[in-house]
Image 1: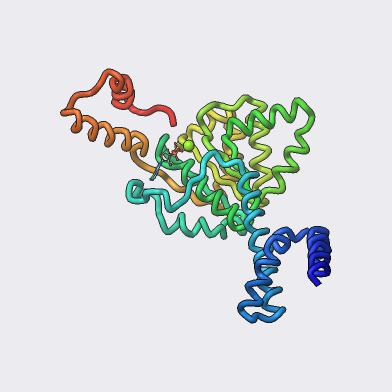
Image 2: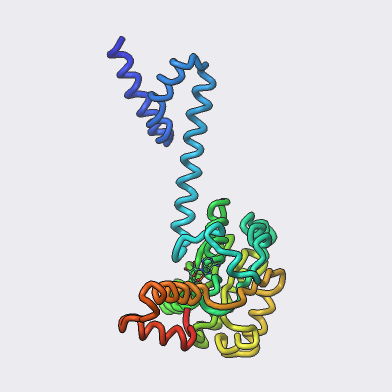
Length: 281
Ligand code: ADP
Ligand code: MG
């Protein structure tokens, strides 16, 4: 009897492996003992097993989507201090985290000074989209421009564009830090116009619209890009002082009090830099 059981078990594991059901393979014996102890019927046992397999598959798929999105860090809306950024409407961000804008192929634009939480919020929305089953890819704009130009030189541009075309949400972070080259700007524009009404875009920028010509180096391209981006778009302004700067100042005030108002030589250059204002993110 014992011999038969172990032979059946080997066969069962073999079949489950062939059917690609790893969680059921791992859990079936433990759950069978539990079901026997609980007097559960066969169908309840089967239901529990299939539920476990499905949950694990969903978890792994979400993990894969998150990895494929190449997010720079993991940020959430829960980790965002809305009290410190009153210009950002918490209710609107919570609504965006439900991803209906992706179904409507709408865009989100975060505009504000460095350190005001644009990348944080864009990443949090990207993570929310991954969690809901959307295909997401995050790029710093300069990174995407470089990738596009390399692909063009290597004649693999079509492949890259085909991969981008499969996305539900494309995040372009930091528009405005470095002006794109003429070719880079045209390639970026091409990506943005291909995405138009086919997938959603989240763009973050520290530049007011009037200065976007500095990036695209052409009135025509800037106008056409803005036209596509801002049509059906939520524009969210992160007004105010840099969060990092605020944090650093608060820390210094605390340290200053603790040290009796003095500051060490080590702190001095940093303090001077902060007093001079933050110029980069
Ligand atoms: P930006 O992209 O606008 O330059 P970031 O999103 O990179 O700014 O924010 C800089 C740092 O400050 C990040 O670590 C971010 O998580 C944090 N931060 C910014 N604003 C907030 C906020 N309101 N609540 C919590 N953390 C914040
Ligand atoms: Mg940023």
